[in-house]
Figure 1 (tube, rainbow, N blue to C red):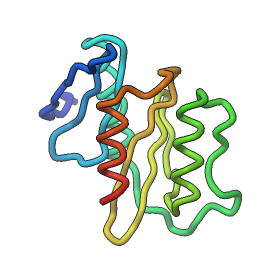
Figure 2: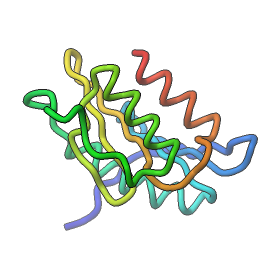
Figure 3: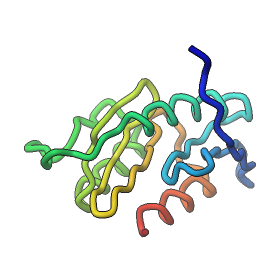
Length: 130
């Protein structure tokens, strides 16, 4: 089966590194130290984002266990759960959070990028606020 083609945008960050987004897939964003790594991580993010379904009910334990996540990813994940988002999927490199009515999905990278680059952080804040 051929890999699906998606349009992507890769943005340099002033503090170094890159953040990438899949066009037409709001919330499907990631970051990395290099351009090539950003593209590779975006493939993982898009796969997880595409396969995430809305939660049937809120998780009883308040969300997925984030103890293994790097500090920033763990804080973002805990904040999303506290704001009513549900973690519905986990891939090798990302958590997928979903909020219903309207359905919104957002990707949180769980790799050790400390702190989140400004471009990724701003894009994430804009998606979460919508």
